[in-house]
Image (cartoon, rainbow, N blue to C red; front, side):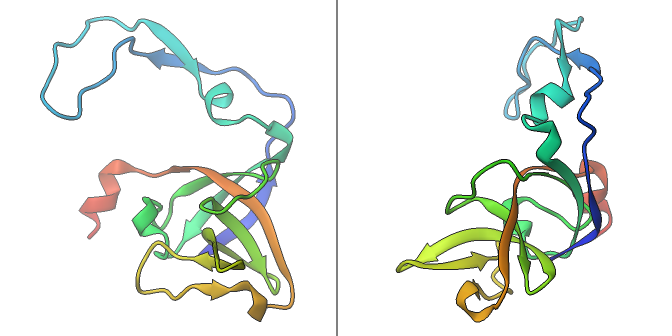
Length: 150
């Protein structure tokens, strides 16, 4: 999975953007009575971005992470200020190429794994230059386009 375009850092100064947030959770099972009013607001910058100076947005290209819910064309929020741990989905640079995979260890050997069985694991010992560039924290995709385009 390649990441298109060069990552751009967020500006250090965040402008609050408070959007309406319903006070009730929405049922994904049986319908529940809806409230006719919006209770509180939410600032997406505050909710999604913990480290503004080390957070970047990247556009996903490819299908190797579809099992993790990350689709081709998604907007990925990546935090370079987080320490990567096994199980994290990370942006890595392998011999000067960006890739998005899950960081794993097998018998003490670090590897990167796709969340799509069509892609083999990447043994990091087979690469000269390896950098875990950042940890993917959110993936944003359009719910209406993902199934209609297939």
